[in-house]
Amino acid sequence: MASANTSCLEENFSCSICLDVFNSPVTTACGHNFCRTCITKLWDEQVKYKCPLCNKLFDTRPDLQINTLLSEMVDRFGTSVRVKEQPCVEPGEVPCDFCAGTQLKAVKSCLMCLISYCQTHLEPHHRVAGLKKHRLVEPMDRLEDRMCKKHNQLLELFCRTEQVSVCQFCTETDHKSHPIVPLKEEYEVKTAQLGKIESEVPQMIQERKLKIQGIIEADRQIADVGHLLTALISYVEKWRDDFNQMNKEKRKSCEIQTEDLVKELEQEIEDLTNRSSEVKRLSHTKDHLHFLQAFRSLKDPPPTRDWTTVEVHSLSSVGTLRISLNQLVETMDMEMKKLRDDAELKRVQQYAVDLTLDPDTAHPNLILSRDGKQVHDGGAKKLRNSFKGFKHSFCVVTRQSFSSGRFYFEVQVKDKTAWCLGVARASISRTCIILTPETGGWTLYHDKDGLLFRDDPNVRLPLRAELQKVGVFVDYDEGLVSFYDVEARVHLYSATGCTFSEPLYPLLCPYSHNGRTNSTPLIISPVNKIV
Image 1 (cartoon, one colour):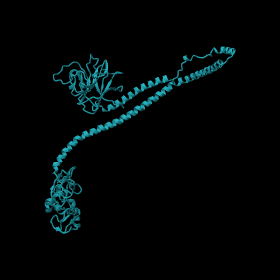
Image 2 (image 1 turned 180 degrees about the horizontal axis):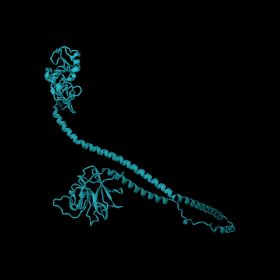
Image 3 (image 1 turned 90 degrees about the horizontal axis):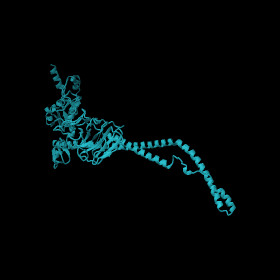
Image 4 (image 1 turned 30 degrees about the vertical axis):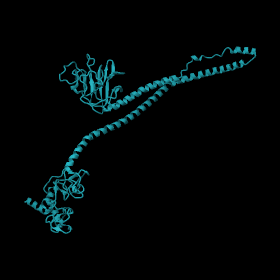
């Protein structure tokens, strides 16, 4: 019984257009009721005005009035009327344009009405004769944008000449001689082009990141130069202050000594000047007696000091100052190199990478730690027939390789008597004994005779103190391999003008333990960046 009552209410209080409870019901001249919004929207889209139920045609657009009685009944009984539940619209789906309040999912779009309908609001298009002629398509959003503004037809084709979407009528008029294809076909072409663009974008992004990195690095280098100059100025000022302070007391004693010596010299000059005048006068006299009497007093000169034996210890003398300045220049050169190397090491450490050793490339005598960070000689082992690692050199390379850009890593060499490390190209011979750029290795070598860069000929390098940790920096694109004493913050050597045409692998050679005197492992260390 309740179901029958509900059905009756649905029939009497539902708009035949939207099938929902009447909202501001109005009555046409033929006696049928509709929501004001529904009938107004319907007639707005038609040239002729007729009733959707009985198809009665009106000469002019009727002036609609609210059906007060029906409106009151709807207010009273409308809460009992419910449209059958339908799925609500989800993100990305097309909503029903007719639903008031919560919008339901559209099931069709009408190309005549330019409206999308849910199942309930689509019902008149299946029942009303005039609406049955409308063209229904799968739900589309922004229907007004999908219609040709000139012909009011769906844009289903694409003009390749003008690169615009067109309707069927457009192909018979303005675009008659143009190549026309279905939207789907052009979509597939453009999608393929988009895929190419999409594959290129990461590379473009990487190029711009490298550009930003270069700009930041250039700015950092300028800042480093400023810090370097500031440090040098501070050093010179300190040297000046120390110099002045150290010689302050000595200068006082020298000033006293100088005053006494000047007075003594001035007195002797006066005595000698007087003697010179007397000699001059005597030389002009013709009186023999007077000449001989006066000459006796002149033959003995006044007492004077032997000034050749007197040394004036002036701290401002040219010689002393020159020595001090030469020492200052030498010290400044050392300090400048130290500051420059410090700034350079700080810069390259920004390119630190995480590395692990590849056991498949290790010489059979070598033992690697579980984490792949350490390697040392473990004694002789039998060489497998299928072995693909280094066969003569006690070497191992990392799992990671680099084919562009910059990278940096550090290796602890403390307490080792012999070792070799650097980078090697992918195709380096596993039977190679000596690693040089010609054979595919750029390496720093250390033994009891000192430090050298492996080349032809080898480059012998000065070693001022025991090395504890070595840093290796590679700029693949610039063809640069540099080595650093990390603890002393000193640049050791750079191989420039290198040609890299294949991947580079960081390489470590701990060499034989030599009766346990060289058993300490080489360790890939985490980079503690200079602040």
